[in-house]
Amino acid sequence: MSQPVLSLKNVNVYQDNNAVITDINLEVFPGEFIYIIGKTGSGKSSFMKTLYGDLKLKQGEGTFVDYDLATLKERNIPYLRRKIGIVFQDFKLLPDRNVYDNLLFVLKATGWSEKREMDVKINEVLDKVGMKNAVYKMPHQISGGEQQRVAVARALLNDPEVIIADEPTGNLDPQTSVEVMQLLKEINQNGKTIIMATHDYALLMKFPSKTLKCDSGTLFEVVQRTV
Image (cartoon, rainbow, N blue to C red; front, side, top):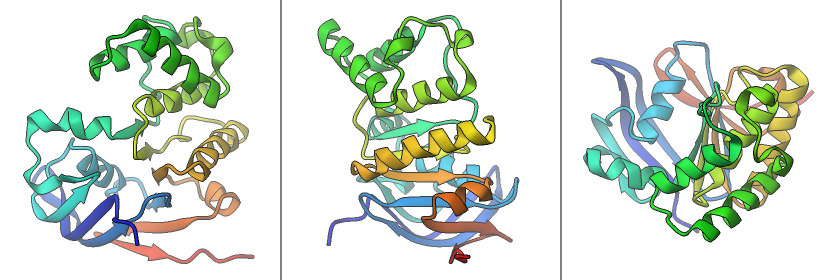
């Protein structure tokens, strides 16, 4: 059996000094697609932030893409993030530069320097998400769904082991949400592990997968009813 990409034992997730989820025991293996669901304020985002180093793991044991979250030093957070891709609800594209320069910015920030290699990589990830024709467009010139596709492309730049998607369809209409989900599912079928927080239950029904729920300070697996 392969090693888990994420392993949490007796973990408590804190927001400030309040434990928002307690006693998490979880293993996620390569190639899995995991939903994290729960009401607003139930701790989903705090859970995700703990994985990518925005919140410190104060209690319990956790390893994520071979990094020990409990002993993670500030200086090592960028290296952890090179091994994961993050997709946010609000796209987080830089509004003052075009699609190409948005992706170039990330590559330079993560240590790339060869112009030709960067060009090839940018073309490759935009091709994967069907956005090659938008390479020189500004974010405001493309739709919300297209911006999110570019955000997914950005998450793929460093060929991450895991993609963390925090409410990636939260700002999109239902049809566009389905298109973005189809894209994420395709990426998952090509071998990428995806952990996705969502409160869009319609998507869960349409694209069923292993589901964990944050509720009353706990995180537990729920079995989806099939109609």
